[in-house]
Length: 127
Image (cartoon, rainbow, N blue to C red; front, top):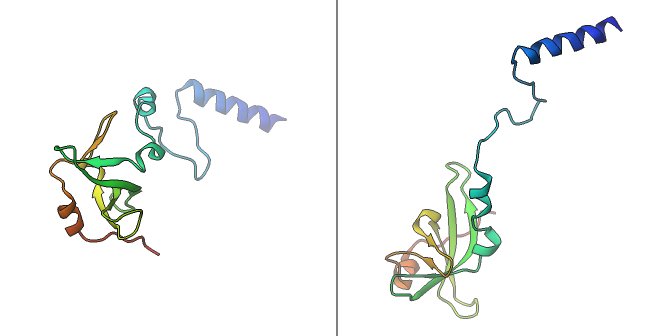
């Protein structure tokens, strides 16, 4: 009983002194400050996948097939499907999401055309 009271007294003293709470092993050690309203007004991956990509001339240059975040530098990439008809003959290429501009009515990739995208290295998923 004395040890339980001592533990409560020490905890109360530490909290009163402004000590940071202890986290369980494996729990996040920092709290990320973010604007929840800003995050909630963003685009969900499920709404981006399948989006048509156009250039400044409003020509369709591809479709977003997938979204990937690299493991090393954590940069988000859009995997774009280029060419083909009904999925046959399409080529996948990956471009940084920073190259895309999203608006309510379209996704713009400035300076893009199908020839340029088809000339890029083909993206393949790691096995």
